[in-house]
Length: 436
Image (cartoon, rainbow, N blue to C red; front, side, top):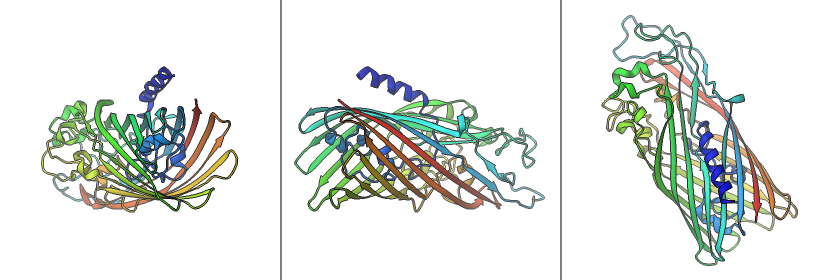
């Protein structure tokens, strides 16, 4: 069985990079696994009977009975779009100006049916009555935009004259994959703690940015170099506390994951090609009102500003790729999640949830490059169910809808022009669980 899990991990690593950025606070998802997705990510205060509970809160795996195996498949669909506004061409363009061709442009991902697939899962082992170990495999939603080649009359003569940035088809493909050996212990009858060292695999690709070669410290490592891969290391800590009156509390903190430099893109990412994975913290509360109904509330904060590639301002001094150089200008972002679980007698459990991101990390004044990374969603609703087929086999299903959100702001490279960006998305999560 261990070999099955190992082979599953290898398969996931091969395809997980095909992901889309329309998830939780920025590119962090609204929970991992179909059970968490069914409540829009709320529920870190709860234990569970699935290994992927460890991705949401490492402390939760000690509540998984016996040994358990889980395979989870997440299907995502999103097509970001943007529309630069019309403008009066100046007689003498200001130095460094870069107007975008007016008119709507929609991302066209190079995947079947515009659906991205992300396999996840894990396996849990009981060590004794008070401790457990799990091997958990999961991924962040990532970022993916693919804007096709087209004739662009606004381009300077020395460029190819095609695509949004005058260098052909443009886009970004970012994915983050995590393998987390997880340990949890029931410290007292009410308190449990968990820890998960994390091995991260990050992959990235930029396309269509060659027109900015003069602004880069390494023009040959700026764009169109295929996918580059890097390793990183960090940890996730979790706690759950069961209080009187049906209340339970949860807390999670993931450290910033330090990732090796991307040699193939050291000409665009600051600090010579570094794109660390930001730290985040979550707090949650659950209230079991009676034997069937449980209410959930979580809040999550992702610290993007502490990562140079995302947090550095686009107008930072220096060349692209330099130490402390320009980044995407992302701000820290919070997500608020509420959920409900209904568990009547019988084989079925039902869930629903709502998530709200009041301040997405992308600022409206920084859309010129962030049309490549449209993490701007605010409102999401979810519903899900679990069916216990037998004492050993269970199935989970969830659907999360991210409502369309629009933001608009000036073109930072040509303030006379306005840019409007929008995105909406859907996530279908399917899970199969087996208890030994």
